[in-house]
View 1 (cartoon, one colour):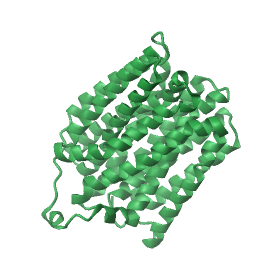
View 2 (tube, rainbow, N blue to C red):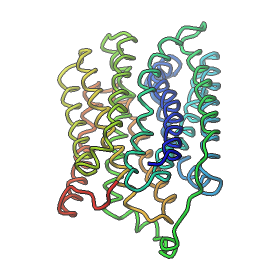
View 3 (cartoon, helix red, strand yellow):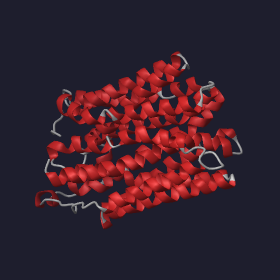
View 4 (tube, rainbow, N blue to C red):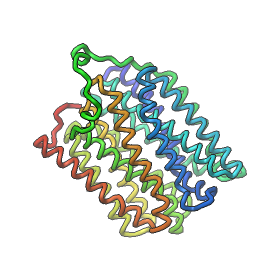
Length: 398
């Protein structure tokens, strides 16, 4: 990888780390603030559902905007939405208004819809043999979020007279820092070789029906959906089990470390063992999380299970993204990426919305049992594609 490519990837990783820090703060405190402000406790996780649904709705418009005006312009809009997240969230808490909290979360989703393309921008920048590593480097920016996010949520919780009001002000500062980093990016304009431009773009339905696309989507959507649903419910579940806020933030912190620390070597694992083998390993890790969650509700059950949940997400998400680049031609890139992330976040929004209702109605075990059929689907898709390819090695290096 050339120096200019490395610098671009590092800037993208910096922007990713600030976005993920804000996102982890939201996930750490949103259900608790929702529980505090909502008129109906079953609606406590509605802000997180609004965040994910907003991300799904904005995903395709974000892709089309960046296709026309460039990724940098889109990333600047995204960080501006992050600033609005903090402002509306602080306003909601100051006035005790649950619905302004939902509006704040919706702006987080818009921020996320643009930030999801940091990893694709890195893939576009890197040479083919370094794509999976460039993707992993950007996602590894979340290691900062794992350390900073839960601690910021905890230490800013009571700085003002109202719980978490100052935490949302901190989100404004993080988003302004991300804006400055994105403004320094110099991303190359998308280029398509003459040979590639001569190849006609296929109808989107033909791209979406490919086994490689369906497997990438199954891994990303199931991994992300299961992770968000369980992570959303965890702070409330620990509260119901008598665990203090400090214990919940520590568990979330280790979970997020599990999500992002493996990114330093996931790309190399994919190159060595193949993307499908890593995705299958991710599915197995999520199964192990469910087994641990069903075995008890002590602090160590939450801690060990959430760490495995994070690592499983990492393998499935980076694996799914790496597999996705095999599903499209250069002329089909924007539509395919947007369709993949829209469908992924549609699944995630269902999981995040259902987390609160499942937890309040049937408990922590129900939240985890519901994930099992989807894990079987992801595992089946990966194994089926491996059988079709007659092995686990990738047909394309990188």
